[in-house]
Length: 292
Image (cartoon, rainbow, N blue to C red; front, side, top):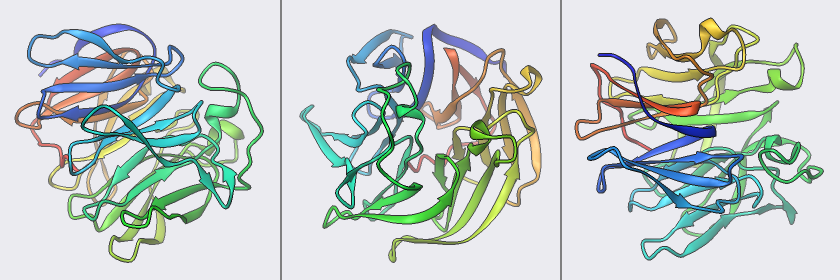
């Protein structure tokens, strides 16, 4: 099962999400300020949205709607089924968010998202600005009231996140190493209380080999954890797969820095990999959990 490069010509491919109903992958091209669409049936590549407010992470909710984290918008949005855009979160305690990065949606409809400062650090992937939030938090948006609450506040730079298949675990990448050599480059795992809207009992799930970092993460149906690797040793560029207990099972080598990934395909067994200038795909022997 060889790795294929299915599309290319991007500056920084990120945030892939698979829409089974249309058999296509949407993903961000952050500096080019657009969301791309790769159609799985005929390989057609097109622009889905431009400008995209320098979108980064994307996911899909349980009603089939696109959820997007926007750098220059400094917000999380939902694209309704009629194409209109609803702002889900753009402030906390009356102050603007930093630059929402990635999101997941739990079974109750709550949206959990990370908010590092990468999108306001310069003009390449957003609009340079001073952070208004004191911390880089993980937030939860209540599905009924829309209230935005902090669920974790001790990250250096929270990044990609994913749910275990049973939604009892939450995985969150910390890419704080980008801010200093003593900061973490790892994935943390939390016990998740979906009904209570809480994440607790944090521990380090897997350390990355510095100077590489892991930006995006997904789970398969057996609870294995698949994560991106990049920005460090070129020999580490690609994807890592861990058991649910945190043991490294193997690596998929990609000739570029990998930012994020998602499962897709009609059998949910095709791994789509956003590798900087290109979108790669590889058929695996597992099925993605396909939880946002």
